[in-house]
Image (tube, rainbow, N blue to C red; front, top):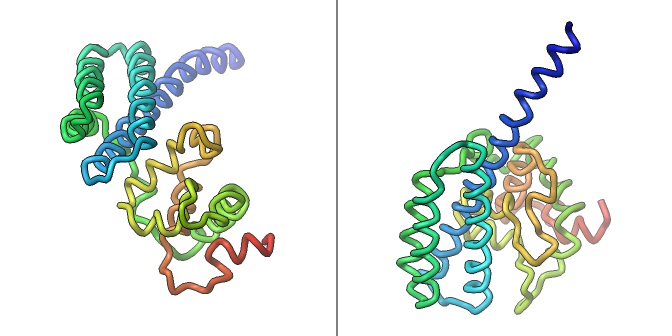
Length: 216
């Protein structure tokens, strides 16, 4: 009887957890596009950024269909906003694209409780240092001027914390920074963001390239 109860519980929990995962994916995609289109509004707009927005709109459509199929919601209004955004993107009318993504972000906000506010000190920071060294430094510590690979410390101090978290969660398609393929927990994402946003006056041995080069 106990085993039967466990099987029944698993049958209930699996679709619930899958639904929660799809909801998070959708929310992250919406937040990522809102961030990217805001970058495009502020300019300058590169061909690389336009191509990424175009690709991410396609992914957003897929995630919206998958989420609504599980959650039982009407995907029509979401698809309508994506269509408007696509048409505006073809005209390079970036404020219009941003307007559609902002509307979707208000409807599907990312829950960042437990991650924000960032704490660039303590245990989470030390875990973030370990993650950066072993997951990120191989590519990012060697980034130089003109490189398509950004310096994550510079990026982290230029962006809002919420946007930085979304980029860590989503990754950058077409690169090794593939986001969800890296099974980071919320605490690990928070730790990585803590480490990247630590004050620039911290010892060089604790800030990425020096430590990564030493192999610690």
